[in-house]
Length: 230
Image 1 (spheres, one colour):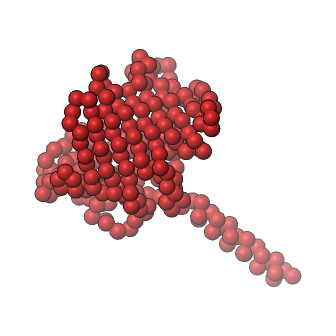
Image 2: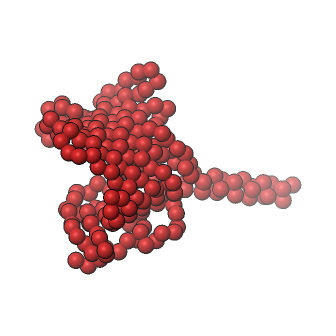
Image 3: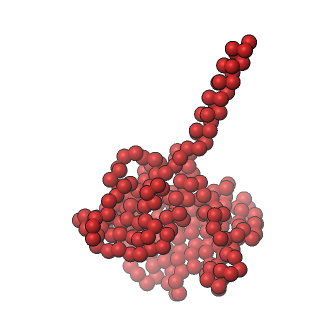
């Protein structure tokens, strides 16, 4: 009897290990074909296509652009690098946005609230409307002269929309997340439409993702892209 009890305990421990392993899966890479279409009231329409690679550990996003012309763009915590023919053609200083890129939010399981739970923003209101949950997020009082509130909507616990305001309560951006696919257990929006408002100008940006891979262990030359000396 003791033998069978021991076997049962060992089997139960093994099952607990398996369940723990499955639910603690480490997502750290995102790869996809992408297209970005932009239309503005003041500029000509633009189309950008290629494949992107994001590595959470390296904290870098690499765009291998194939249209309108071949170019590599690397984004990290400090700068954006434009590279052509293996030469750096432009370096743009940029603030740290990696943690709030959609790829990082997806891999970290924080997309449903757009990562706002881990920011200075505080949840101040919750409403329900025809199956949609709408939450209001506001910055602390001491930041309200430079930052505005955000309205976030969810359907079936998935991020549906995000509206950003400036400190004078003017809408500066609307984003809508659609066409979700479940890939390796992750719910991923494959169509994102963004409306940007600057003065009298309205810009519409449509981004789509296809052929998505999670934790791909190939294409190391992109995931660990080496920026040329400049």
